[in-house]
Length: 563
Image (cartoon, rainbow, N blue to C red; front, side, top):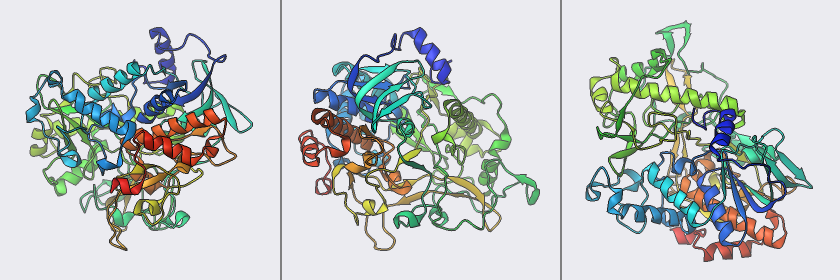
């Protein structure tokens, strides 16, 4: 069993492998204790060490890098000029990695041309497309280069593992029994587990538009024009018969839910796949154990109405080096497992594992269905069956080329010192203490499938907005406020949250990109180091000193620098 499959199994396996500490670390106080394995965790540790501070990364996963090493090789950037510092250092390292002819094992470098939003990014100082194995090699190289202390396979005891005194975290304990004491703590997880265990305020789901005076939050049926099911898909097990019950994953019609209303639903997750059409490296899609074609009845009905969408493929198959892809969700029925992840943010580890296993089974079954099921149009089957997962990727994963990292697009969001909202994204409200930039359009994947007033199935929740409908103003990079990574005063004085930061659902949909997490991790490492040096709370770090250090280290955080 892979060490990431179950927390209990992870603890046992890592102990046998020697990847855990031999005992508690309660007699040692580290300047900065970072919990998580995302890009923010890596950059926070690097920055703290560069500023002369001791730092430890307490990583629940054994594979570092989060989505950056977990299949998301088509970087969601929006505007490359909005990134400097450690973030840009990584993408320069990608370019340097592929400048070595030895890295091109399955195609000639001159035959590779990035497509999509990363078109034209190859052959320059930085490169924004890469294989998962390349990203992992770079980050593990940084681990050695900078002497990073990473304790892998260490899962926070979320029930009793956080000790606070006088409004400060004193220590955290993992399920293995190891204790990490620190002066400043950083929650760099995609879920915000340390933040929540420390008693910091947070929210899950979509706020109503009325909460922050927004227009793109909450229920958004009018925006749901992308990745939509074809008109006329019947929702019932027996077509036309409501008494037969609804198909899997479909909610009944709710006349009480109005546009802009808030809810606790979470935008859909999936596995970001790395595929190949290279016969020597391809693992064909396999029917998973327990496969039930009834789970894909919506897909069959959707394709029967209008089988082809754009190029006829139900995916975004972005090109990566060496005949590989970063494959993501597209169309009305694709890799997003809509409505099946709402419990994830607050779920216990065992429940999360069940959710992840269900996502894996669904997505493996989906790919087999698209490649081989006779109810799928032959044109789609013939194309999808050319592809498969990669023999040389995710060897530490779930088997057959599948990774352990579920694409957790959004989970908890802190309600902190400053809340980033739609108004920040449009530039009608400007962060008073900028520390990094958001550069991607406001973006949410679907959160639910439901029966509409017309009696057919609809997806809802997708928002993809670059232009303000009211003013005609076009989206451009905007600054993120320092207060957005800080808990409210009085809740915790020595915690920084660079990933599950303080933002409304729709603003988080713009911020939630891996380059931004690299940048915000650098903010966390910088602020933590200053707080340690001054003996102050993170809320009392002087902004002038913070901004001065970020600027000298190449961070981009002023609007005029990214235009």
